[in-house]
Image 1 (tube, helix red, strand yellow):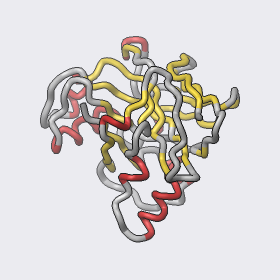
Image 2: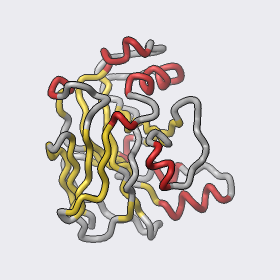
Image 3: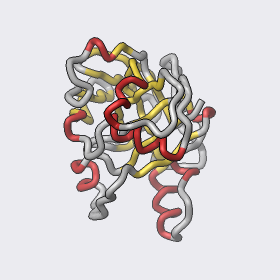
Image 4: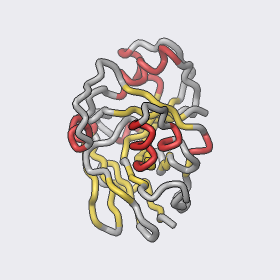
Length: 204
């Protein structure tokens, strides 16, 4: 099972991060399977960072084997989605970027890819018009809609499949809107798609 993630996919997030770079193609990175955290299990703050940020995202689950998928056929390769959290060790990421070094350690550490309950996309009229939000301690801290994506889901799938064979069960984190921020011990995180709670866990 592979975990793909897309960076720079919401203009609002790019603005809050003061990024002026606009890529002509999706910006990809990967997380190992050891990054996966599911079943609403608690997230334990790692000792190697003092600045862990949440990034709320639509997560797509691949349901067919595919390679070199045309964008017009990409919708056939997934049938379920959920809300997820791409945890980032922001202090480590800044340090790595400062020296021009890879920053996988800031994005791909154990339990950094949190996923909620998957639901069929048949419950949604349009995958590119889905509200997502994150509440921390009963306060909404991040909110967005997939229509704001720079690269829609089907284009992302087509792009990834040029380089990697997609297999059943692979996951794609599709990017985060504005509103990212830090988490602290004791925080209670709840993630929603279309006002349906799919994720509910605590930070320890």
